[in-house]
Structure formats: C-alpha cells, structure tokens
Length: 315
Ligand code: PEP
Ligand code: MG
Image 1: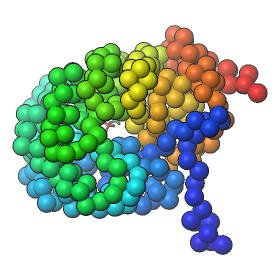
Image 2: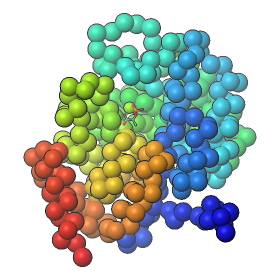
Image 3: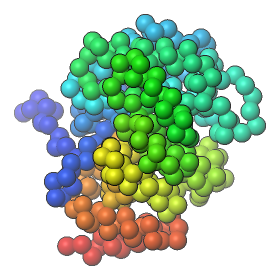
Image 4: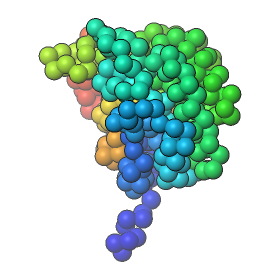
C-alpha cells in the first residue's frame, strides 16, 4: 500500500472548468528532477543552468554540459523541459562570463547581453543542448534570460534554430519586453515571465536589498498590468505564456496570473500542491474576475485584499 501511495499519480493542474494549467518545476540541478516528478511536476518550466557552473572558473565544455543536460532530460522523458541559457548577473555572477566591475550590475552586461558579448559560450551551450536533445525524449524548449528588445529575441531564436532546437523563447523580466510582447512573440515560440526581476525593474527596487522589500511585491498592479500585456499578446498570437517567478508559488496570485493570461506556471516543487489545490477551485471566468479586481487596485496590498474579498463572494 505504501508503494502504491508513492506511485499514485498526482492530478495535473487545471481550473474548476477543466481548463489545463500545467504546473511545472523550477530546478537548478539534475538531482532535484526526480523529487519534482514525485511532487507532481508536469515538466520543468525553468532550469537555471547557471547554477550548474557557479563555481567554474573556466567555461564548461560542450561535453561537460551535454552530460548534465542529458541527465536532467532523462528524468522528464516525454515531458516539457524549459532550459534557460546561462543567466549571469548581479545576484549570480559567473567568473567565466562577466568580469567587469559595474556600478549597477542589475542594469549591466548580464543575461543574454553577457552571452552575446561572449557568443562562443552561448553557441557551445546551445550545441550541448541540441546534443542532449538528440539522445533523450523530453520535449526540450530553450529560452534566453533578461531579454529587453525584439532584436535580442530574433538573435537568440536564430542561433537556437540554427542548431536544430525547435522551440525557442524568451524570458519576460524587463518591462520593455513586456510592453513589446506582441512584437517579441512574433519571433519567439513562447514567453516565460520572470516576476522576480520584472518586479525589481518595474518598481526600481533591488531584489537583493532588504531596505526596499516593501516595493518588491508582485501583487503591485503595475506588475500585473505588464503580465496582462504579455498574456494578451500570447493569446492573440496563439503562443504559450508561462510564469516562472516566485509569484507563481503564491496560490491566490497564481489564479490571478492565470486570469491575466498565463497558460502554465512554474515554481519550486514544494509549492506545487498548494497551487494545484487553489487553481481547481476557480473557473476561467472567476480567474479573470479576480485578475480584473487586482488590476483595478491602487497598490499591492489593496490588490491582494480586493482579490480575497471577491473570492468570498464566489459560491
Ligand atoms: C525571475 O527573475 O523571476 C526568474 C524566474 O529568474 P531568476 O529568479 O533566476 O532571476
Ligand atoms: Mg530573472
């Protein structure tokens, strides 16, 4: 009975009306993959590859990388796995990618900008991913971090497709990318909203700085409005829009994000059960009503309270 319980499949993420909202895991290592699968992850929505190489002094080789990616992809055979290209930056510097001292590293040569400045490293990573993809059967999607422009989107998607990677998307975590989501999604296969950085940049509040945490609240209607822009663009173009920032792990906010157009949610595996249980309580119409109510508030706290008050009126 114990074994049967452990193997009992967890039901997939869905709303009360049956609309599927795949619930995916955020991972930083291959080791976390099995545990995430046990907790009901329907795939991986964000594999943070930079975590694999935080201690590396020199750039990892194609062979080193493909071995790691292969291992992780095997844990999710048949399932979607979104791998993010190395996201070096303020909070996670990679010695082999960014050495420059910058006054404002959050606004500096980070994410895709840093990869573009060392294009051989990006090329190697995409080659390693294509090699791992060829010998595994997960559905591999690749995406670029910290994309700010349409030009960067075209650049990344072009390099990925050159290597035979079929599904190439971008993170939306810079306000400019959210505001131009319709044009960005014309060139990308999907978008994934990173609410951690999107909140940081929208509110101009360093996510590493304790003195400004009050501003770091993804319930802020300014952030929600940007999420809604991306959701609307995705719906208009028929392209998936995921959310992979911490906001997706807040059960009620997860419902609001779906109401704003998110088609999948990715989070640390420990949060999956609570989000799954909350989503299934609401219909698509109710999720949209909650989103509209939160959007109409003046601030983060008011948005949260308004959504809580509204859900009490649902029968
Ligand atoms: C984000 O910014 O929301 C995100 C998911 O990426 P990271 O937290 O790794 O910067
Ligand atoms: Mg980010």
